[in-house]
Image (cartoon, rainbow over all chains, first blue to last red; front, top):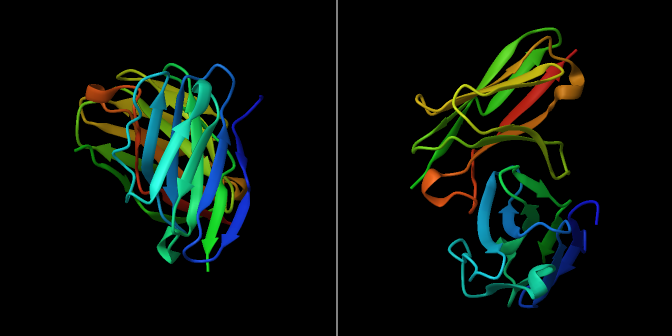
Amino acid sequence: GAGVSQSPSNKVTEKGKDVELRCDPISGHTALYWYRQSLGQGLEFLIYFQGNSAPDKSGLPSDRFSAERTGGSVSTLTIQRTQQEDSAVYLCASSFNNYGYTFGSGTRLTVV
Amino acid sequence: ELKVEQNPLFLSMQEGKNYTIYCNYSTTSDRLYWYRQDPGKSLESLFVLLSNGAVKQEGRLMASLDTKARLSTLHITAAVHDLSATYFCAVDPVDNYGQNFVFGPGTRLSVLP
C-alpha cells in the first residue's frame, strides 16, 4: 500500500480483556517496528522485525505483550489481560534501508 | 546504552523569530532523523541525516549533524504558526544499525501570533 496502515484507529477495552492491534507495512519494507507513546510522552520501543530473522523483543514491557509478523508483511501486537497502564497510542513503523521510518497513524488504546 | 536528549523540551516563540532546537546523543552514530508530530497525529519524517556535516533544508527548517560533537540542530527561521508541533530526533546507533532507533523526548513548539 501507499503507507503504513494500522487498525483499529481507536480501541476501548475493559481491564483484563485481550486486544489485538494490526499493522500493514509499506510493500517491500523489510523492517517493521512497534512503539508505544503515552499521553504527552516520547516513544517507547517495543519490538522490531527484520525479514525472516528472529524479532528483537527487548522492549516488550511484560510477558502479557507479544507480536508476530506473518509472511514478512502484516504484524499483530497482542496484549493479554490488559491493564490501565497499557493505555497509550501504539505506533507501527516500517523502513527500507537507511531512509528512516514511515509511521502509521497509530492505534489509541484505552483500558477502562 | 544510547541516550538521546533534546533541548529545550518546551519552546514558545513569536512569529517571525528564529530559534534552534538541539539534539544530543551519547554514543557513536552518523545516522540521525528528525520527525514532526501534530497533536493527535502520527509522526511525519522531516529530515534524514546520514553523515558528518550533513545539512538539509526544507522551507523554514534546516537540520544539521555533527557526529564528532554527537549533536544535531534543527533551526527555525522566521517562525510561523503552522510550525507549532512536537519535534523528535531519533538516532540509529552504530553498533546496531537498522534496528530500533532511540528517540529523544521531543520538543513541543508553540508559535504565537
